[in-house]
Amino acid sequence: MVSVGNHPNINLMAYSEVTKVDGYVGNFTVTVRKKASYVDTEKCTGCGVCQDKCPKKVIDQAYEAGLGYRKAIYKSFAQAVPKYPVLDRDNCTFFQKGTCKACEKFCEANAIDFKQEDKYITFQVGNIILATGFDPFDARRIPQYGYGRLANVFTSMEFERLSSAGGPTGGKIVLRDGVTVPQSVGIVHCVGSRDKHYNNYCSSICCMQSLKFAHLVKEKTGATVYNFYMDIRTVFKDYDEFYQRVLEEGTLFVRGRVAEVTDAARLPGEEGKLIIQAEDTLIGKQRRIPVDMVILSAGLEPRRDAKEVGKLFGISCSAAGWYIERHPKLDPVATMTDGVLIAGCVQGPKDIPASVAQGAAAAARVAGKIQQKEIAIEPIRASIDKDRCSACRICNNQCPFKAINYIEAKDGQRAYSEVNPALCQGCGTCVAACPSGAISGTVFSSQQILAQIDGLMFLNVSGNGHGARVEEKLEAVPA
Amino acid sequence: MAEQFEPLVIGFTCNWCSYRAADSAGLGRMKYPPNIRLIRLMCSGRMDATFVLKAFANGADAVLISGCHPGDCHYVEQNYKAQSRFLLMRRMLAQMGIEPQRLQLLWASAAEGTIFDGASMAAASNMATKH
Image 1 (tube, each protein chain N blue to C red):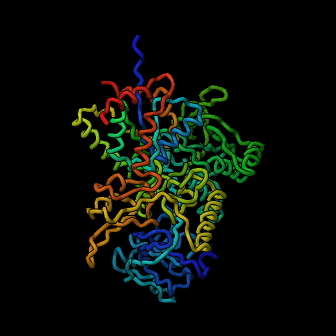
Image 2 (image 1 turned 90 degrees about the vertical axis):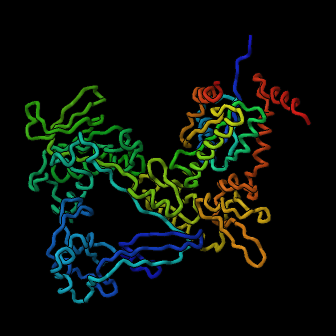
Image 3 (image 1 turned 135 degrees about the vertical axis):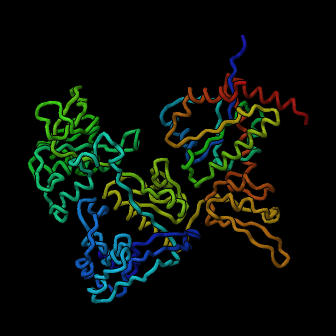
């Protein structure tokens, strides 16, 4: 990340969002809203004094997953790139109460600027790669698993922070009270994934994530670990070897979906524990397993704003909300909009190696295009016969790619519409919409399709008599 | 004995979803009735009223327009345009004395090869031609 931040050809714009995209491959105009961070990045040295001196502590819902604190002026984590902090206006004492300015007082570089405002920056780019990632599944949506209600039910993100040496507990795996080391831990797979009530798809990373958790718990606490799984999907290189290793470490695997996590003790030995109720489908029995800690291995979901962002860049989402690639097998990097590529979990749930590979593929694709200095486009395009165009502009609004331009009348030339072949994707909606029949689509022209209809009606499938029926009809039509 | 009525259905399929679904029906060794004949378009938005009328004029018993599920269109939103044209075409057909249910619209995804299997297609064409 640091080398990306320092690269002279990479302009990293953190704390910003794209608000508008115009143009086409090789010629995009992008408008970005650079949100006010109240820190002048020209002056800031990234020393972190402001963060130390800020008196306001806020629970960090993002990086610390709600387990730790950050200040009102903060960097999301120590190694964050770029190194400049941002000021959280909603929690800043100065913005809320009008006094404080501790950060400004202690900043040696005079980089704090309370008057900063959002800036809109417009620039030109040739290609766009979208790699906006995913949102973790919110485990509160499955109330029977008790997350948010039962203290010692953790999500995978929380457990990641617990087990991180830089986390709020310094890497100690403890219960919500912060001191008790769990004696037994239950890990629930497929939370929010492969479940028709939530998401139908497999989130692909959770098996390995859960195995890692099992390994870490065993290594750090020696607790008894139960994994509740549907299937173990350890398909990539060295993954199954890791699964075998976790098995050999003595982790217990119960095949079955967890019905409920509860604190209502029924049997001796269950008091004060969380009871995981699940069917063990390998022995065909219901089991109640008391544990100290439950980890919900939550799945991945598309970003909440994936649809809107997709619309901004002219690409579409699948029903689940992942961006649709040009071809699921042969072209998983490009999209239907030329010049817009996707990488990582925006295309579908995937792990780090797959995301890295896809990111590298997208970058290589763009680099290749730049090297070629020319682009090849699909031959399926619409074109407008300008002599037949009545300039009614009906087609202008039909096009989702804004590929049809209206040319105003001038110098005795009457007005007409024109297709920009670089933007046109060849869907043919304008061809069907044109009341003057002035638009034709290559490969799918009206004559071609009408000829296909004729051809299909003559096709005689033996025994059903259709061919004969059509011929009779044709005879009946006067010449 | 009277020959059993077998409707002849012309299907206009979108290149990205239903045409691929038909492909995957073939890959999955599903059988779909030979009296459904598919024409590939790049998008259901390409659907022109002329095509429907031509198909009926040539003796089709039903016409099926098939596009991606709402929100799934490869061309962002053209399936909605197909839908509005479909509704318009149905009204037009009624005015011409053709039973509007003979024109059917079907949302499909590339994964839904099963919609082309014999049973569901037969059901669809029966529904379209029952009058």
